[in-house]
Length: 109
Image (cartoon, rainbow, N blue to C red; front, side, top):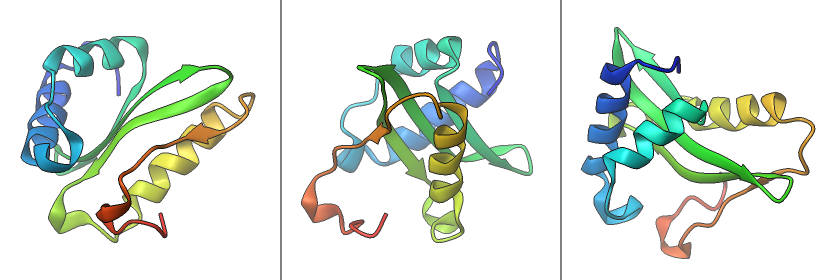
């Protein structure tokens, strides 16, 4: 995502809010900060955000904080695309760390 694209930040934030039960309380400022740092990836279709990955880097790793894809676009490879992009972009780091609750049913991801 390009810095300054407030519409995409708003859409990503709103998508995250739809999944508060899984992602927890959403803070718009976190999305704005991530976008400003170049740490917010978005997938769009027809100008609408259909998925996002919010991440940071620390301790020689990418720390994936949120990965969210709209319900109707799941199982279409978007999450894999985000992970592959992060892996390529940050190939110099040791890896990608992710923490998820075990009851999400996304073990294969």
